[in-house]
Image (cartoon, rainbow, N blue to C red; front, side, top):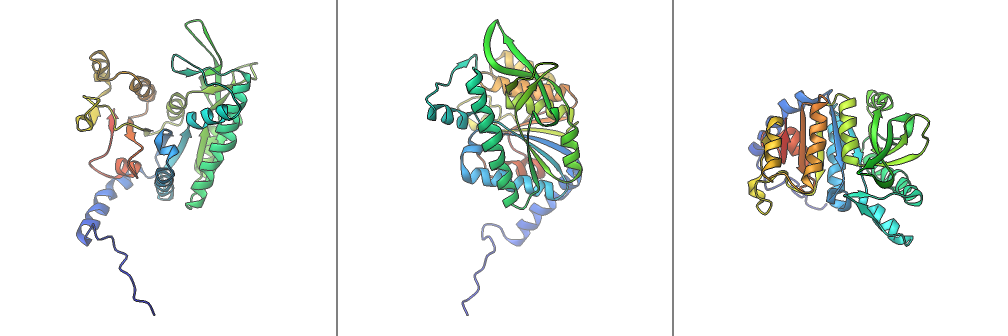
Length: 297
């Protein structure tokens, strides 16, 4: 009979392991029964190891009784499919121009491929997951964006969130996984491509979530973009305008922060921008004193 191998992680002794668990306990008690909306995208979605870590985190959160709603984008995958069919990706003011053919591809990639791939991984990790798009049960209603008189095609902004289907799934301990394709408002029966960050923030408001978390490919808000050690860990909402005026919050960080502001102004107590490139960053944020990334509150 082969000699048994010691499977205990040598990096942590028993006292360290117990300290980790004890530190996590009050946070577990705090979050059980509460709703957390996670916007998932970026490198955490492209790297298979990081993807697996995110799914493990979400299954763990759900298993201990936290209501997790996962909202995802999929820009890189859409770009790949457009390249495959010989169609050029076109962006106007940072938004994807979406004509009728592109909208079909967006729907196919987000709802038909990525959404079901995420659901599959969650199930493989032992979770109960259900894939939705914003069209299901009229979850997301939208109107065509008219930005500075520029036609963006079938790009929409959310006008209404009807969260009943999500709350029903959460009540049955499912993890809703939502792709951000929306149905037009009123008599408009067109499908619209919705920015995933914005949609996730509005879903968080509609669900009266306790936390809104954006998994990104940056450490958070930095005083110096070139120095990860300059991370600003906590920012009260009234101080955000000052950071925008002095250029600390600039470029691609502006829309992420604006989504956090949408969630906070809608009643969500905490919004987070965390680094999805760090394995298990979601657990570090939820269950440790140190946290990770930037919290706006």
